[in-house]
Picture (cartoon, rainbow, N blue to C red):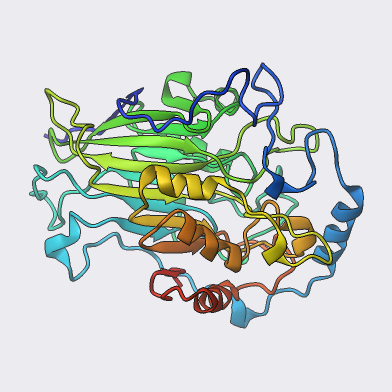
Length: 403
């Protein structure tokens, strides 16, 4: 008998909260949780709530418009995933598996519970819990599919071929990270209760506005955690994940009038063993991953050297609080011109710094190779990342792209 996966969300038994300040948190601009800010010196003066630097905005648009079209030599070659076990089949079920689906979208499968059985129907080891980050399968990252940035790299397979996922986690509501068509497809095609959606503060109402029941969506503030207990298709096997919403340096908005109105976030996921009579959350996590979302590290104004600028303090805090990660996903693209985009988009140099600060054992570069969103040459991010690793003395096998 096939058992459908069930996802149950509860208050975390082991939250990694920051001490609560007196009054409202520094990143809240009001008491109604409807306006937010990056409360660090590293953000500089980038488009703070209610203020727009029109000079920089027009400069960026002019540079972007005048940028040459990508050459076909720089296009990202697409490989269709077959989701099959590799030659390391004996350890497959206990591996962390990550599939890049373009830009910032990753399907991550964590180790299967150790009591899982190999399926009798197919010669594939039992699966672990699956998490889908920032899924966007539409052609344009825009309010309309008639206008706006179009893909140079298609998704690696049709959306209908996406495997069953247990959690969908969104970093923020920009169109290259939050796509209505993709989210509605997942919600409407999977059995209700078998997939749960997680987002930062202010986004739950948006989900409800596009047809989601609020019981299937959880929104969190920075440093808030929830435990997701997932009963998998492989039988009675369960897996418990502690999901923590974490800070990053970015902004939000789906129009010119709602910038900073919802929160943006990075995310940590800790997998813990599950025991029926004790949630087993006192045990050491089996695996830990960090999804950086969309983030900058420091603001680099015109005429200033990046080495002289303050860096965002949260990445060091995250690394210290979690004791490092087995795997991290860190943005490396859409960073030029630096005077305008450095506060919110990491360069490869910034990404390597974040890799070190969060203490990741292995990192994968993302947020590149799909849409032209900035002015640096398209498709050359893997080479830039490799050089950044060499410059910092980081092994290029420790931090690379999946391309």
